Image 1: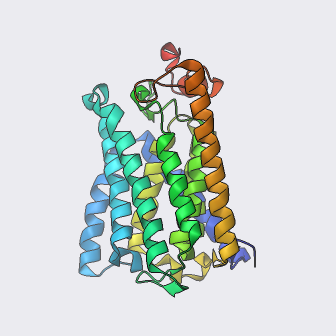
Image 2: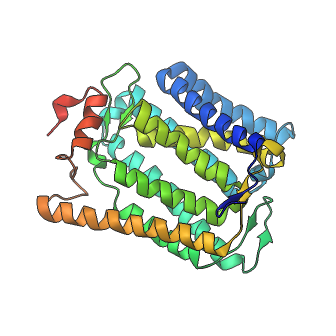
Image 3: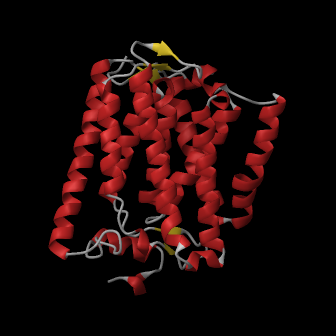
Length: 313
């Protein structure tokens, strides 16, 4: 048994690796093809709704508001990003406001869920989705971290479509330290609020989109995040993977572990917020109207990776 998770075995470790590889590969295949994107993110969700309603497929997640809302809000995000990438809407202000709005909504949904768990589950409980959860101060700590995460989303006015064949949606001002802060916050959220599935809905998902960002296509993290989340969400609605021995790594349900993880997420998010304030003070830029990290080499790398060098400041 580990500090954060339990249930490790050769089989469960292989299960984790299979899921990560599958998410990375499916994200990459659909990223490169408009036709496959339409099939995966527009056609398949409709088929899935029909199959769930008929009882052909389904899982405990498909019977809860949060599992359904999270999956279909991710799909709405992906479809919106496809409109930005593949139509003239990408040339309009829609390309600025929609991505930041859908990201903010997803963060707020999770903040609300953290608060809901804190308020509802005063003792270790198995909820209607079959998840073992316990509310505590860690939920409030992580909800606060989510607030700082919202305050540090900058540069959406600089969202662009890549000058590449795949026409990725690029957010150049969304740099590695913000992504790290999001990753820690999201893993902590999953650990706190969907504890039993935190390894898969949290760690595996975060690794998949982070690998796609840092090792495959830089600057398109939000696109990677939305697509991997949508793919995994559809899988989790259709398949009760929690009942499979291959996917049986669970949280340790240790209050100390909950507290430590949420504390780390909060500290890192506060640090990113402080750094943002220092940059704004130095550059006198308005984060609501301007990109603020344009002098960063990482910002410039995001442009170069997407053949957008001419926009480099």
